Image 1 (tube, helix red, strand yellow):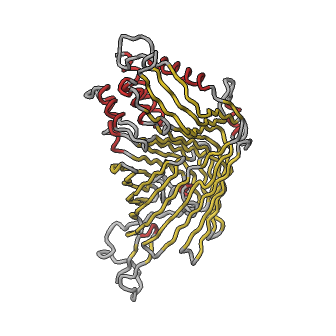
Image 2 (image 1 turned 90 degrees about the vertical axis):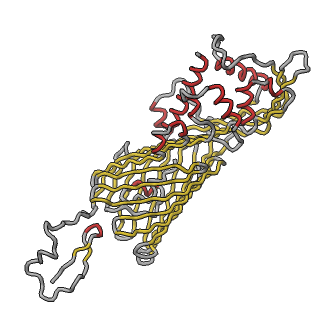
Image 3 (image 1 turned 90 degrees about the horizontal axis):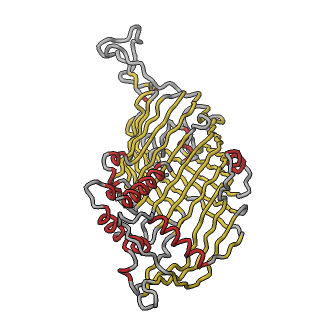
Length: 486
């Protein structure tokens, strides 16, 4: 069972790494968390000055995949049969996506009654990948079932990058404070990237040649890479690369918030319009369209008596392919796009402290289209505790429940996570998202309301004015109502 155990461990580690890897649906319109302005630059959080705790301002990780189900590793499942079944169900649209957001610094402050200025420094990693169904069938089932059948591996692709960026944002209220507009500029310093552009990758196993099971491979395309770390890379190098801008990028965010009336409002934002140009230490491996013959490998993926690692055989196999294809190496710059995101929302504040909303999310993740529809509840429960509960229909998944909270007002901790039910149904886990961080907020108003020990109806106010109007409401802190009675 060693081969199976190794595969299980490798796959489990792979998924584990991804979970340490964004849509921020729960953070969207979380009004008391100042970092929510990073999603919609039009929002103005409560207070006059907001400082994200340096190094711990906000950390977020996200992954989503439609390739495999973790039922592969269920003790009640035959691993080989389940793997073959899931590989048989793969389509060219299946993918995995992962990202990490690390906001090292965030500072925001009000400029008068209408303006709000924010700035900060952040790190981001984003990656997507697709695995061609024909390639996975070939690797899992072997080439024997596909004699003289052309398999198309070209849908296989991966694109990813990681970078530091520095941002400045401003928002302003208009139309008697009914409308807020905001924008943010991002200057990007690229740290590393990989990008595949595959034209052809076709495989045919021939049975009539002198060497049976010879694989005929037709291939062509380009692999671009930049920022591949050297063996002597140090933490100081990473810090220096974070602000040298030799691989330069530019991004823009836009946002709007419109208050229709006392109860209804709409919000909209667009993030990450821009790209990164990789010019320094960029390498390109170019394969001109060609056809080669390769002697296949013979291996039973599930043979426990074979002591040679299948991974070692596979690595040697692909190394041999690389040598036979003999790609040309060039050093031309290339470009990767930032993952453009759109958030639209309609909110109904049916009570001064409670709100429900509908949200729409759209992301272009390196050419992979991702959509989500959400239904949320936001509650400003006390002066020091706010919550948000979120249901999201995400691409093909309709069972994503998330929740988040903000604890504290001056010193605030926020935490939020999606796909909470996955904790009890990990076999069907295909998405996970969390975010947490800390902020110092100054100039916020105490929204607590002093509630009298006895009902004011039964215990009239002393020295109340003789002609006090009946049931004349005055606003209390946090939207509460105080009534005076005769």
